[in-house]
Length: 269
Image (cartoon, rainbow, N blue to C red; front, side):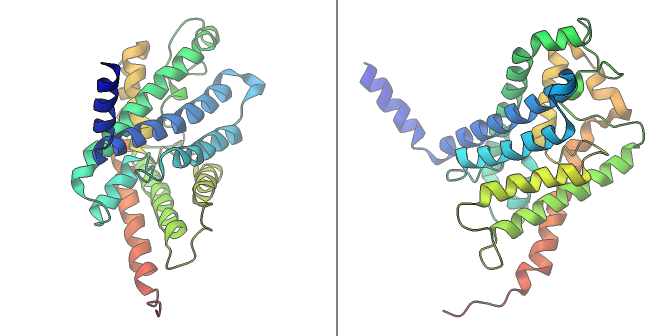
């Protein structure tokens, strides 16, 4: 009986779409546990966390996620990256929902894990209240929210630009016809890229640059008790980290492929 069950499981795991779904699920989970945990330290820990720590958490979370699943699905961990690869003909569209579902579920579970790990600290920090805005807000542990100096549409353009830079540089790092990262160092270089984007361009919107990073944890906070304000705050900011990264990654990919990759002389055999 046990051997029969094992055989059935192995048979299911042999299916390419199942392996890719699980790879995106687990790699995104790893990324988000490290990333959200670092934000929790910054928000809740007083001297125990910092903005630099958040950038390192997400950056090295990306690195670890690529090591977990890069050889199976490519470890996109980002619906905007998946969208761009499909839109530019680098991946079949039929894989898009499989990748994104895996990413969203992994991100949602990572948000739930973070909430359970820091449950006591979250309650202590705001006296038992689950606040979305204000000096004792804790919803920003899980998703991005606009600061006072930003408007909705400036935030939209910011997310487009930063995600465009992300995709452009990912294509450059992995372009074997140009000047790619040394073989085996790609996960580290992409992690450093994410960290540098946060250090240099993150203050305006929190550099979501990833629908899979922002929407599932935001939905988790909605059902966990923070309420509808997680969607209405910041003039209904919630949709921007979903839509703007798709546009930004697509434009960044076109810029790199059109201006750089297309101009690389063919290599002689």
